[in-house]
Length: 250
Image (cartoon, rainbow, N blue to C red; front, side, top):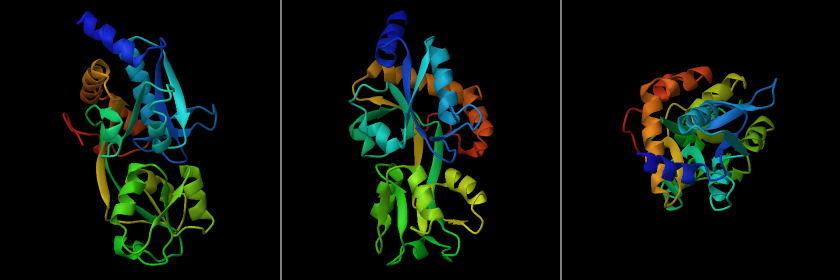
């Protein structure tokens, strides 16, 4: 067991600290963190999980901020981070290995105020301007499922939200938990009841790090079982029903 732990530490914290890649944006979700207005530091589910992982490993945590999960994945070979927590999809499995899910959720659309859009079918019409965050699992799925229009890729979630607010887009593709929070701050906006994508969000490492992956699997199942993940959702104002059950994989 001591050898297993040392092997995991070598892969998860090669610099002496575990460098955790997080996405920072304007709305909380199982993936997205927000910036605390008082401290300026990010807070959210992945920040809580990063702290728990550091305690589990007995090493300091270094948060590495990115504008989206797509940017995190693009940096996998740049030696900027050791572990991350991102939605699972087939494209990412080419470069990342995933532990079990800690969250499960849907992606859908939020229509901008005044558009009158109420269904997925109404989003998928010629002339409807859809925006998503480039490089994410959500925008890839939106592009696969949209037949009559296409999704514009924004560099960051802040940019995508700004396009909705300023009338440059009619609908935004994102995880439902983020959209529900966002709609509360945008009177007249409507989140679609239907979804076009469903997947899990899970801890991930670069390919061929078997010891790290085994350690992350044990860790994530433990923090689901002891209520840590549930509490992180609650603190972030998210519905705890989004916490993945034991053994869940995507």
